[in-house]
Image 1 (cartoon, rainbow, N blue to C red):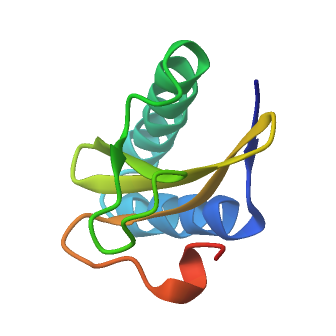
Image 2: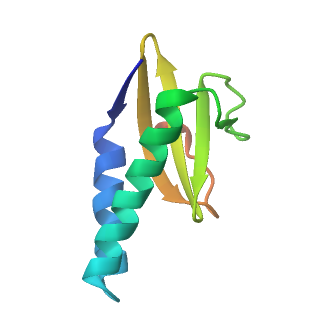
Length: 99
C-alpha cells in the first residue's frame, strides 16, 4: 500500500512548523519530522491501526494521534492518503474529510 500526503496536509505541516518555530526553529523541525515519521511508520505496517474518526463514522477515514495532533487519513484503493493534520481539540470539518 502506498502512502501519500494531500496538499492540505502538507500545508498544515508547514503551518505547524511555523507556529512552533516562534519558540525554537530546531524544535519545530524535529517535531514535524517526528510527526511524519510516526504516521509513516505506523501506517506502513498497520494501516487500519488508527481509530475511525468519531465525527465522520466512515471506516475508510481514520486517524492517528501524535502529541495532541490528529493525523486524518483515508483508504483510497491501494493508496493511503493523509488528508489533514490539525490540533486535537478541534473537530474534523466535512470539507477536510474528502467525502
